[in-house]
Image (tube, rainbow, N blue to C red; front, side, top):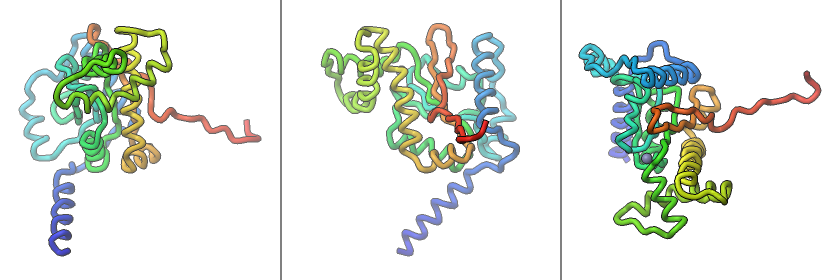
Length: 240
Ligand SMILES: [Zn+2]
């Protein structure tokens, strides 16, 4: 019992010691605007963060990190998150996994970003021509079999593929892969929200936004698809 308590206290101390001393933090909307502006700089070639910044490295090492966003993205080497959003050291908290799926490890990483680092924005970033999504589509459509642990990854994306096939029964090939990739982004967003009390409470308190986004590989443009859950307008009966 005492040992368990000591482990708990040590864990808590570790979390607190890694938490940054907070200054002025952006709200979720401000964080989203900063990320959108970063993708704009990336598209125009007027990037600001590709140089090595010695001062930032030393400050972030001693004072901790204050990232503007958590990004759950795909491992695909053509979607380097910091470059896509023109962000520098300690500015984005990136969770990358093939197919940008949200399993327990990914969710725990996101919870750390929300609870400990108090990051105000979660972006699920999918992309066009995703090989992982294509594998999941091939598995569902033609029964393609994949080696190793890939079937486990494909299994996580299966509900998104099924939803895309239901919604677009006439689609095939690249069109179906694109629809499945879009469904897969929303699936991960719903799993982040639905699977974590920490995230859900932060969304309720307007401390965090979850945003779905899709990056086009050729143009580099990130299209923001909307928030999860969708904001609702409450209409009070009898009032205008
Ligand atoms: Zn991918």
